Length: 211
Ligand code: PRT
Ligand code: MG
Image 1 (cartoon, rainbow, N blue to C red):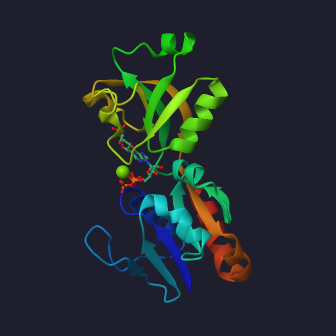
Image 2 (image 1 turned 135 degrees about the vertical axis):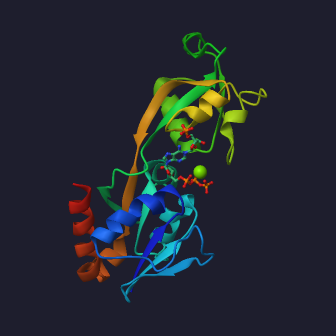
């Protein structure tokens, strides 16, 4: 049995065509079904639905053999026990620093000000500002980061941006790109050895489908 960990929403939606290329079709849609284990047309392949941030953890500890996770999520997880052979080039976005329109980020950085940064991506933010030599106080949030600069909780946020409409709707502007993000195939290292006969063809098909 091969278990594939996916999160619902954009990752599931954008992985469906890749699964299809490998001849795998889930019997139910996670948007309408409450089931967390989805059977597929292949008797020896199943899909489990977990939170996006939990995909690396399931794969690391063998709850799934393979999965799809954003580079943002993988960087925070650290990648222990994971083999990441392939950039699937799906769910693309950018990790950005954003501030209120009326906040002069460049001059705050130039003056060596200590900045309060609100983010879900604490590791990524810590590394980014350390590399720039900017002193920061990191405030861990679990969502709605855009609110933090508006109510004085933080000077800036580190968050994912795709269309930019969320920032715009909240009077924020992106001032710095940290890294370009896409989703990666993640594979349990032990499973790759023990189930190579089943997993390698799957990885090869995904590689060809991505192009
Ligand atoms: O939503 P939930 O809390 O369940 O979990 P999640 O946000 O971790 O999952 P999900 O499905 O929303 O995101 C899964 C993966 O998609 C992320 O790990 C990213 O790699 C990738 N991705 C691509 C994005 C976006 N684009 C994106 N725009 N993840 C989140 N966003 C959010 C962003 O955080 C911000 O709140 O969308 C908002 C900005 O979008 P724009 O279009 O207004 O700029
Ligand atoms: Mg989300």
